[in-house]
Image 1 (cartoon, rainbow, N blue to C red):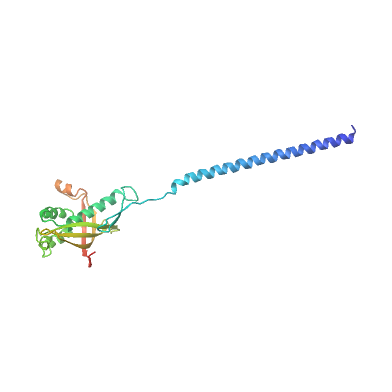
Image 2 (cartoon, one colour):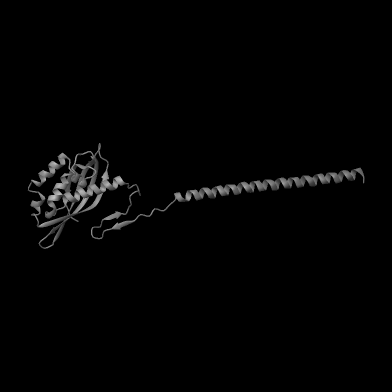
Length: 228
């Protein structure tokens, strides 16, 4: 074999080796790119899975009272920012208003006594003055001639000043004439402020009625002009 032929064969092999090496490098680079793309895809899927619980559909349950038209959202304590203190406030204010605004001659003495356990000195003076006036409930409802039941239609808290809290309630009174069972209705708005004073000195029987020292510091009631 001539020297020229040998050189040509050597150059040919070198060229083939260069092509093979280039192909190997390209394949290797392709696998690296594919691996990186796969890793990115896995990371993206993992992030999507982690975010899925954050995107939820909130379903709220409401009830409708067909007689009064009152719509209420059904809640449980601890859900939707409704904590135990809010539940306690709603319960205490509603109970106080029902006791104070309702009327049953045969339970009047107990309601009269228990209402005063929740009154501040100023509110209690106004309460006693009311019972000593011509507008006293037993005078208006002619002792046992009528029975008044109270339904709280709305109970909305708002920010107060100092340690007192504010509550706005809308109530419906059903006034039933005992003699013939006929009923009339009226509607009132009540604005009250209150606070808790657990250190207040009370007897054991008073503490059973008002265990948390719920004290009403102001009370205003406004009759609505038109009945619904």
